Amino acid sequence: MDIKSLNDKYHYLSPLMRMEKLFNDFESPRVLATSSFGTSSVVLLHLISKVNPGHPIYFIDTGYHFKQTIQYKEQLQEQLKLNVIDIKAPENRHKFTSEHKTYQFNQDLCCHINKVMPVDELKLKHDLWISGVLRYQNANRAKMKIFEEKPDIVKFNVLLDMTQKEVELYKYINELPEHPLLPEGYHSVGCENCTVKGIGREGRWVDSFKAECGLHA
Image (cartoon, rainbow, N blue to C red; front, side):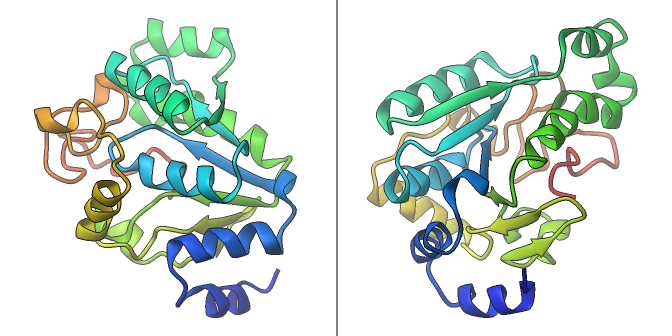
C-alpha cells in the first residue's frame, strides 16, 4: 500500500466519509475492527454500525474488565446491533498473570499476554486494522497519522483528529450512551486492576511510566 497517498486522500475527509471510503477501497474480510468498549469507543462502534452493519468487532476480554464495561458492551451490542466476537488469551497464560499478579509487578507482561498476543493472532488474517485512538489523548498519539504502516499490519486511525468537544458532540447528536463509569470520574477505562479515576488518561497505570498497553505504541 502507498501509505502517503492514502493519507493524502483521507486526510480532509470526515470520520464518516473515511469509514465509507475504507470499505469501498478495501475488501471487508481483510479489515480488522477491535474495541475495548471504553469511554470513547462508542463513536467508532457507531460509525461501523452505520457504514458496514454486521462487520465483526473483536472485544479483547482480558479477564480484568470492570463489570460496568461488560454491561456497557452488552448494552451497545444490543442497541447498535453489533456483531461482537470475544477473544482472550489461552487459559493457562491468563492464569499465570492472575496467580503471579503481573498487573502489579510487570504490567507490560500482563498487557502483552492478555491484550497484545490475542490481537497479534488476528492481525495475521487481516491487512488493515481500524483503531479509535485520538490525538488529544496523549503525547504518543499526537504524532500519529490516519494511516500508519506497522511491521505486521496497516493501522487506520479513523477518528484521530477529532477533538474532545467533537467526540462529545457526536455522542450527543447521535444520542449514544456513555460508559457508566464516566460520570463517576473515570475518563479512560481499562482493566480494573490498573485504572483509577482521572482526567483524560491520567487514571491509567498510575505511579508508573506506562502510557500504552502495547496495542497502539
